[in-house]
Length: 334
Image 1: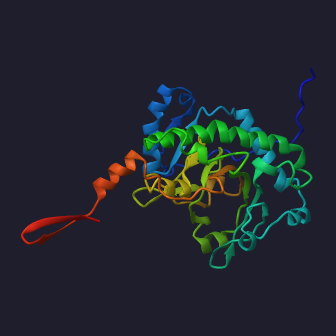
Image 2: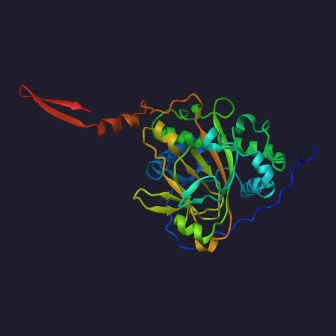
Image 3: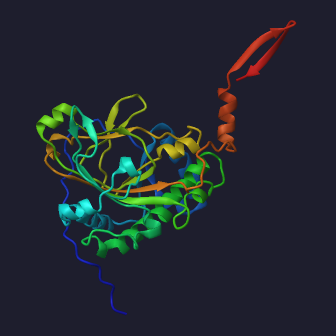
């Protein structure tokens, strides 16, 4: 059989990693290759549990995607920004605040950051990619790559997200597929690939915003692919902002608000933000690739109180009130 050819695309060359000694967040590194066996999952589950309870973020390595595959998806990620004219971008842009749709383009200067300064971020969402990405309208330059984007999303969902969800379930002593069963891909589930590009700003805008490019926020369960430009920070448990360090071919995973709700606060949806890169990376654009995973449409975001872990915590944290009635001490658990 003839070899399958893939469409050519200009190679995206990112900025070199920073050499500055920043205050890095000491995130755990999870070796996902171990998740393929029961023994490996038993070893990883407490590591993932503690990472998501303490930080809400972690690195994932040995996830099955090669460096070349990651470079290819970044080449594709730059297409909606460098290969599409402004007029065509406007045809595929949506008013997020008015429609609630994270679909197509979010163009620059849509969000207000501070002191009259608006954002310099463009992103392109392949919304509901698992259902209709091949049927949706997309910019002409991106269309040849849609099958690759769909395949990339499917790999992320089944080979990265699902193993992590199984580990999170084990961390709460729930059946392994508890979270997997409510994060579908082809039917009731939701998720999308986002390509996102931050453009450098003027010194005046940096001063007005105190170097913040995107304010602190939370969100859905998210996989962030390796971005050499350092700009992401998390709110550490001690209340200090710390930088997320770039590790070649390592993913950054965060839990998000939905997981915080479902776990009754056992797992943390950590606040994070994006700010101006360090001095040796200023002037470079910052291209990012993200996979967002939401629960199925019909899932009610309430704590899974059947978790033995939550039940033990409830007993431990119960507030005991006492009063004396006819000389007898009566206890009330609030």
